[in-house]
Image (spheres, rainbow, N blue to C red):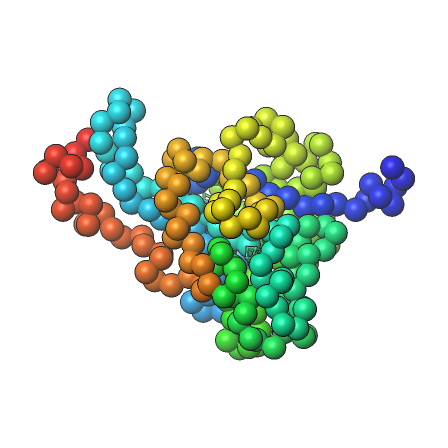
Length: 236
Ligand code: SF4
Ligand code: SF4
C-alpha cells in the first residue's frame, strides 16, 4: 500500500450502550456544533423504563439509554429514495446530503428506518449527522465523541488497526451488533449492550419514516412504573 492509499480513512463507530449514563451531552454538543434547529436532533439519546432483573434475578426497575445517530448504512435506503440523487456514501464511509440540490421532498425521511433525518425548517432541506465531516477534515473527532464523559463512542479509521473503533472490534467484536438488522441496511454504527442492558424491543423507539417526536422520547415514565410498585409486579 502506498502513502496515498494509507492516507484515505474509512470511518466507523462502535457505541458501548453499557457505558451510557443518559446525560445528553452528545445530543447537546451535536446541536451546538452543527446549529441544529430548535426541536430537531442529529444525535438523540432514547430512554426506556422497564421492569428488568436485578443482580440476583429478582424484578427491578430499570432505565436503559440508547444513543443514536445516522447509521451511515452501507446499503442506505435514504440514498436510494432521493429523487434528486442528493445523498451519497463516500469512499470514507460517510453518508452525506448535498443541500445544494436537495428539493426537500422528504422521501429520505420516509425511507430511513432509524429516524435519522429531519427537515431544517430554515434552509428547507434535509439534514442529518455527517459525523461532523468539517471536524474530520482537520483531524478532529465528531463532537459527540469528544464530549461524552463515559467514553461510549469508539470512533476512527477502520483501516487503522490502532484506531479506537478497530481496537473495540478486535476486543469485543463478538459482542457488537446493529440496530434493526432485519432492515438489511448494513449500518456502519455497531452497538454493544443490545439485548442485555438495552432490551431488543427498545430499537422500536427509533421511528421509521419520520423523525423524533415527544412520543418516542420518554424521559419521565417512572410514575407509570410506580403504578406497578407495591403490587409485586415491579418490586425489587
Ligand atoms: S441511518 Fe437513515 S439517514 Fe443514515 S444512512 Fe441509514 S437510511 Fe440513511
Ligand atoms: S454523552 Fe455519552 S454518556 Fe452522555 S448520553 Fe451521550 S453517549 Fe450517553
